[in-house]
Image 1: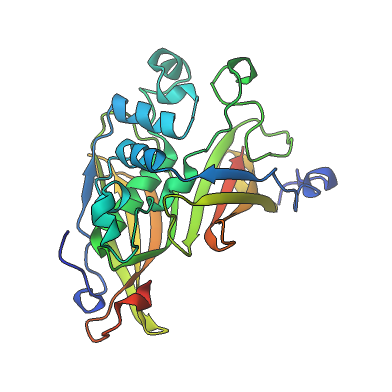
Image 2: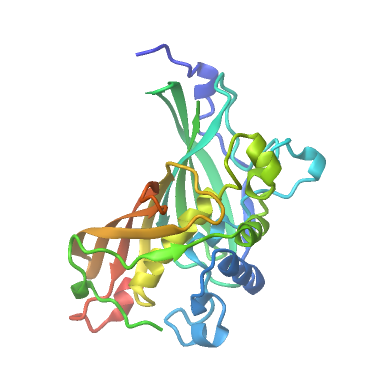
Length: 164
Length: 151
């Protein structure tokens, strides 16, 4: 096993929380998301049809909660690749320069409904190291819980970022 | 609406009805817009090729959305998507024909609801699996007069 790159300072990031953010689930944004994902399910856009479904009204596609992925910041606060310097999900500084998506595990509890206000709370739950083919990899795992205005848990997402 | 799929209709090893997508530059633009994603590899070809990619890159979470659609279409209005996991293993490029599909790995009844586990993936025209995933869905039972149990 190679030496650990995970210093006490990096380890201290476990438990760190991102500032919570909210998502207003409007009929327009749901329609835009459905169109942008090429999803013709009428439960997302046809109020009449949705009214007569078991949901009793318009719902959103399961991954709609990803819509406000990036916090809008002025252009001069974007890096040359277009991403904000500070994303929603803070990543500890490590000696490994490249960031990759390490996969997403999602559990769905109640549907997202048009008119909902969702609150997202994200915490870094684990940081660990593995040896990859081209050298060490650091995995940063965050868990984000989305609740609605009735304090019902809507979605729990576990996402990994890989630094290499 | 399609005919409802029931738990009894599903067998282990069965193939899910495939969903094909060929995401265009326009679709990627719309997805960048609704997710407020200013990352240039999704709209700026010159920049993207300068980064060493062949062409504009399809967003990872858009492939996740396609997989969720594969499932919601299959399970119908009375079905419920309970769990979805996916990891993008390789790049998908704009205008590439993507096939989302999967197989049923296990089925069981728990708390009166039919549960079905699947392996799912996104493959390109060369049948390379660009995204790998798994899912659990709930389906109504023909024998159960109460369809709200999957609610």
